[in-house]
Image 1 (tube, rainbow, N blue to C red):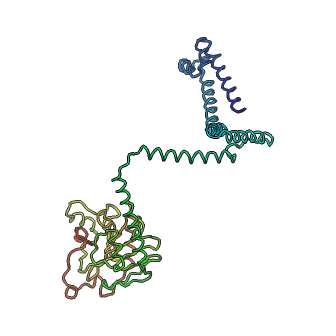
Image 2 (cartoon, rainbow, N blue to C red):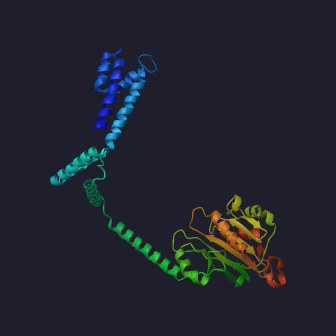
Image 3 (cartoon, rainbow, N blue to C red):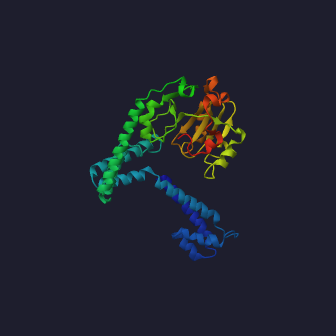
Length: 372
């Protein structure tokens, strides 16, 4: 209370200061400002910068003082407490009187102890606010229920949808629980190759993924042999990502690997390259003998490792909106950790043993049938 009083006295001083300056030009305006101080904005503008008549300093000091007073009052816990007590008095006068007495006692204790009163944390006030908050929430919920139009069909559809989602989540959990991920070195017999999984990555054979693939509504992948999953990825979650591994028989000639991106863009049937631009354009990795690219349609990010008798494919499967970098790195990593038997290397291709080639690498990437 003393703080409010002192701030009011300060504001009065600034008003008198303004009045003494304004009365030199207009006694009537000075009189009006005594009762309605915001009118001071008129002489403020009229005499802006005029020596002896400029009221900028007292005016802005007054505005700051009044603003501080308003802020102090609006944030004073005692004012808030008194409002809560008045609301309580309508239903329980005795409890309101008891709480009023508790606040008064706190002021006395604070004065004797030389500190500011802590009205905000009084047990009685805390309990009252909790009770009033719960009552208000219940009233709001009841009002919303009464005013909102009831559409039985919408409620039935919402209930059916919720049940379907719950059933799907349960089926997903069961399908994931039935999986048996394997770490270490994986023999890809159909490709005559070996995949050395990185630490914390696991392989799941395709015969185990059929149920989960159906629940996820995955498009088919030619010659799919399994999935590679990081141990921290929950395949039942909506953000699960993994790499699908497949093998497609038939030799692919490499062509000019340095010009893959340009060749693919030229061969693309739609006239527009389907692969991502820049760092995600088809890029040949000489060290691993594979090509990596990012495609925004169908599969996402791929790495292909051409062999003498077919092609190993690593395709990213992810619901993430920006998975390119992750997909590129994951598929390229797996291709780099895959080794084939000496006679299965791409350079050991022999038409008399492996049959005629089925096409060129760039044309395969540009085609609409790749990996599907």
